[in-house]
Image (cartoon, rainbow, N blue to C red; front, side):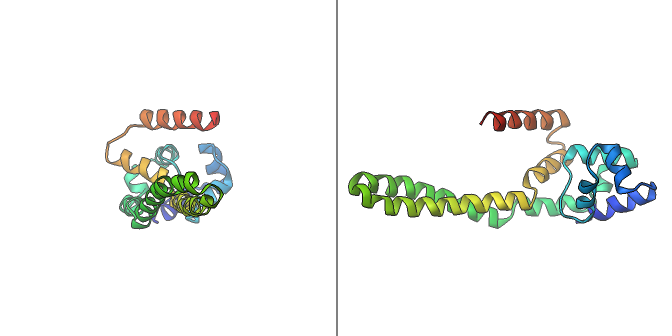
Amino acid sequence: MNFSKQLKKNRELNGLSQEELAEKIYVTRQTISKWENDKNYPDIHNLIALSILFDISLDELVKGDVDKMKNIVNDDAMDKSTKGMIIFLGLTLVIGVPSLIIWKVMGFIPFLLLSAITMYYAVKIEKLKKKNNIKTYKEIIAFSEGKSNLDELREQRDQKNILEKEY
């Protein structure tokens, strides 16, 4: 994506090392390195901080990346994996659970097989989400299209973090 090139170019134009930039936006130097090497993508809050720091628009900073993000978010692989998980979860409930009741111990075979396939799809979805920064991309797309503001995004993230910590 173009963000990594834009970040490095603007950092160098401002005469900043990765360490100095990291200190200014309260992240680690390794985080800056990952962004510049296109291994990770900053969240919307860090993008805005960089935009302000470099005195450029957010559009200029993520030039061309939003369209790529939309393609990744709408990826067929994610849709197919989600459909597969839902189908096998349904089959587990419709076939697996009754087989447990009817065949007792032998009923575990179809139940475990269907459950394993369901888990395969669930893990595949999580890997795709993590690899492609789906959550971050959705936030950036929503913000760039004016569908969400920073306060809403921050509140949603805080609520989700609270729920994750409770469990």
